[in-house]
Length: 334
Image (cartoon, rainbow, N blue to C red):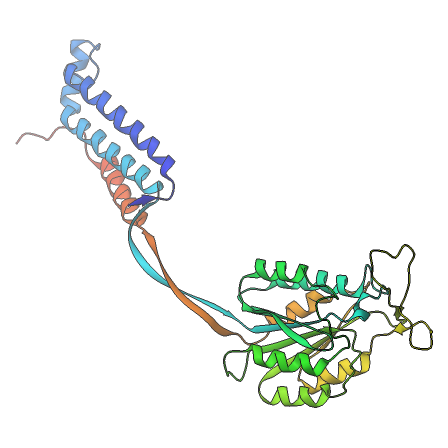
């Protein structure tokens, strides 16, 4: 047995103390009003029955004690309650090519993507999430999990130096995403490809169509501005800002390829989103995931105490009504 509001039992102890006090007081006293005159006592003896008054008081005190016990929220016995975790399997593929260091989105494309994805993960409810990092090749960075704190930690450690093979292979990321799923369900598989869209292979649209046929919905998220930006060169020994150049020495301007990302999303039965300085796109993505059909990811049972205050409250009500309606006049002698 346990109590939901155990502090209420203090009032029960107070009532028991008053009950004992009045009980011993009644033993020492031979009248309800011991200081009354003999004439008053004789009249009270005709109209009041001391034993009935005592019983009435005891019944009311029992009712009050039961009421206090009920208010403490007694919990007796246990029941087993099944709990289901429902959600979708979300695979986030994050581009880590050097073009994601471009600063047309503050503070950089990759930093903006990580910030928005972190806010998205915090909004997930019951969904499993995996993370893929890709550039010229791809790698399953975090397998499917419901540990959102771990996902946040892994996400924070991503940078553009993780994949030594540079480039942007969207098709490689899709292949890795399809291998991340351990079950062959037709539904509930969602891929979120976050990139600036510079595909260096050109096979992404065909592969998105194939993925859609096996039940993988591909959503794309473009990162960057319409104007594009130069790509800074990272290095500890560089005191002034330097930017990437092509073989002829000209500065390289990286622009987001919106067209290919929209085509991939359309081929993959998904939607296109955009991360830039003026949009909170993670809210739109979270809403889209929330409105999707869910599957049961895990089921477990737990036992909990059952509330039993109702029975004691009903008994308290019965005793209080009985105490207030019980007659205190003596029985008439026939």
